[in-house]
Image (spheres, rainbow, N blue to C red):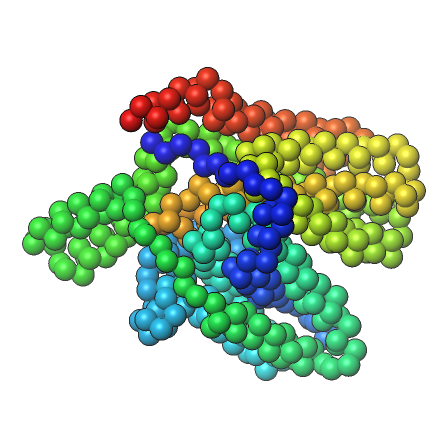
Length: 461
């Protein structure tokens, strides 16, 4: 059974130099490539459709395109195990999948630009689906490359840089596209965005494939399964091969995780599922809260949008510095505490009223702490995956990370209607307490009496 991952502690100078590592710098451009398609199949696309007079009912159906981001775990095993025939030999498994996904995105964007929504809305939807599928596939491949390309102490910095460039790309594809349409038409905007995908393509071509030693107890399970199927002569070869591949790609990643962590596996999954509950469950009520408080749309856009983005990025960068300085688990605990506590600022704002200074303080605390927590969470989840099944296991974590919060968030409106905003944000802060307790327990297992006994046994052996 594997021990919980930790990171060594280093000086501030060492922590700062991590941001200048070539692998970390690559995430600046890969994050931009990952963030660019997102708005182009959501808000920006709906703006285009509304602008040309597409019916609201038809526009609503386009939200289904986003389902691809939530179910990417279904084809993550293919990305994890299958090497592309031609690109794979040239670029390696991870980079070939990234490049293929980027070509899908760029091709889909060009197809959208060449389609008239009023004449062929179904064709536009199919191209949008291609963009979303390529984008979700790129996310899987980029996550796998990031985890395999750098040590655990660099993961927080890489995720911070990734979040920063991802948010910049969202601004470019969102607000940037709305400004650009004043100079060119909507098809022209989508052609420009397709051209910007070259940023990611060039990064893939100039980066290198990570070298991974595939060592896992589950690998031996795969071999035994394949040996058994190979001896099953009464089963057609195609079926035997397919079943063996399916077990190796889908079953073994889960067997590997539970084998490595044993009884701790359930605890780790609970941390993943609860860590962001506070942030996600309150998200749906944030905008109605600002508006009902009496803030202008301009103030909301400037403070929660532009200024909020800067604070999120700053929090992520600080998180990337703290992990190599103080270690992974202590910063993970700090992020859990801060993420829950900053919801109390919203409760205070519900009492203070529509004061700009209070909005600035609230957004400063919430976005800074949220950025820090997200950076360290990504680094911690990355440290849990096996290098044998990087893409599949991380896709599982990223799906589990958002699912509980989204489910609970569906009831947020009912809580506000019955209790009001003041008590709602206190409630949101309280549902973050389990994550704090779970992370504290992880630290206790690592540094408490049980952890000391484990260290003594390891030293004797």
